[in-house]
Image (cartoon, rainbow, N blue to C red; front, side, top):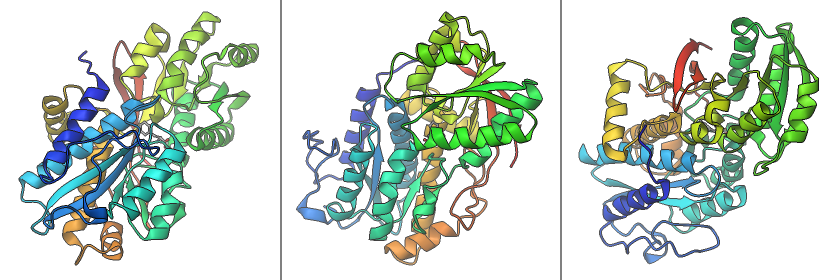
Length: 401
Ligand code: PHE
């Protein structure tokens, strides 16, 4: 399977973006406290060129969850390039100012403030991790700048206000999908849970999974916790082993899940792990090795879907960025397309006009499913269950809401 150096790719993508804004200086990386890697704003807030519509993006281009930010960057880049090649929006070219938050909520909050007050972007795309989107959403809402998260699934993100949207499903559905899969497909009656207590996403999924699995007649025999960034999970796994579960639900991010899978195997826990979209990264296979094979997770799309529209996206993406697009890339592409569609339809580029146009999104053909935004500004879409194989995942089933 083809691999690539994420940072190199990110730097190139940023440069390519900067190139569209000719009068901008080259990306500086400046090492500012906000962790920004994008080019600085020229002229204190007005886009350097009057014929440019400037969007903002916040993502984890570096840090433990770097593949989230890099895939998202690529997906957005592809959508913007296509839109610019087709003539842009309202006679203007689209550009994006990107800030790296290193996967940290505090940095995400600072970045969004910069996008709003300094760069004066018309719309914000991001973040991936729900805890980071939560840190951003309040600020975007207060400023009246529309924000679309491609992939944050915790329900509270869009509850921050009527300027906050997402193009993915939410965790009450995703948690249900895996509870149903564990109970009906794996016929499990005893499952343990290992949650990340630093992640709103993980805590939310634990709650839903536990409730649904119990309602379906199963029993959650134990719930253990870790903190994002930990490297030793043996104490928790030993406690879990004593409860003799038939599967372990680990609603975390790939950065920890891969290591957890290895340590579970070392301790003789030979049961499948179950997870959510946070597992989706090419790094999962590297970190988890053979220990993660045979485990299952819920996700937003499968790149193996034969639908010609999806296959065109997969091949365009491969040609541009050299890898199979994961769900983050697909959702980021979708989020940017929804944003572009709204910018076209909005009578002007005020926050209110753009917000109202996004809210109208209906039957929009996305790569990770068709997008209709409900009154809570969430997309209602099917989920897929994938099985972890050797270096890639295999499609198992689709679950409709
Ligand atoms: N849904 C995760 C969250 O809300 C983010 C994520 C989405 C990660 C898709 C991987 C793939 O935190």
